[in-house]
Length: 403
Image 1 (cartoon, rainbow, N blue to C red):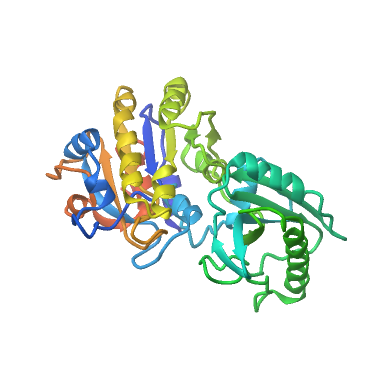
Image 2: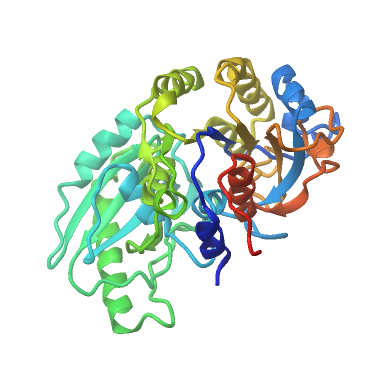
């Protein structure tokens, strides 16, 4: 019996409200001049006060030493073993922009990028605007492929979703994004276990990308696209069914709206700012038991390598927290899905700080919300898949196991 089966079997009813607030890429590394991370540098009176009222710890998205993608990191936070329930990034991108996937569909995440003299000089094409992305996707929509339908839609900034539709497509093909600058875009290759279907799929992908390069040749900075996360729609049991929850998601980026939808949450309408997200939370408060709130910009600024901008993003969230706290949820968890240290300009394997506030948890003496302080917290260090059962227990939603 899996842990999910166990927890589902113990799940009961309660009127308690739960909030999971995820500051994407929250964790960081110490600045060489100060020895403080972005979170420890930020002025966070509300988060620090919450830490004093909570029990704290650190969580690994997958496990020690493993750098997670955003998809598996969020699946773990929602209580799913991210290795057992692996969801390709392409599926999340497609669902996030409203593309309904069927059995003949193969989806991929697209990055518009800048290529000069055959090598990638900017993997994000200067973070082009979503409006520019829309125009470029319309331009690419002129491409037709024999034997397959191709759909490309803008996601946000430099990201888009790409879907090929044809019988017999395989997701056992490689990415074309090297995920580093200074390298040439890769060719799509069949994976060793992919067989003839993967070979045909790789040929289709490469033919499309060659056409896309021709179409974008006169554009700058977004003069090429690269792909990653080829995937087909998996079967995922809904957390709303497993645990009897009415769950709502408040997220601005399509991918996080998609992963929430995939596990059964209702995606709620919100504006782009964290203040808008707090407005959405207040409007929807009576309709749901569990809220997932996702704040993206801590991760974006970390990927940009902008330490101070990431600090400012954390401070923005902190300034709005009183509006959340006025609702007085019975269970509140605040953490990151993974760490994105500005010093590394990307996701890392370092655990994320966590606070859990509930009347049923003891206080542990942590005085501030930061990596160093939370590492001494009473929850210790554990994996993210264990967070949801802990929240359910504190919400009075888990029955006793055994006699």
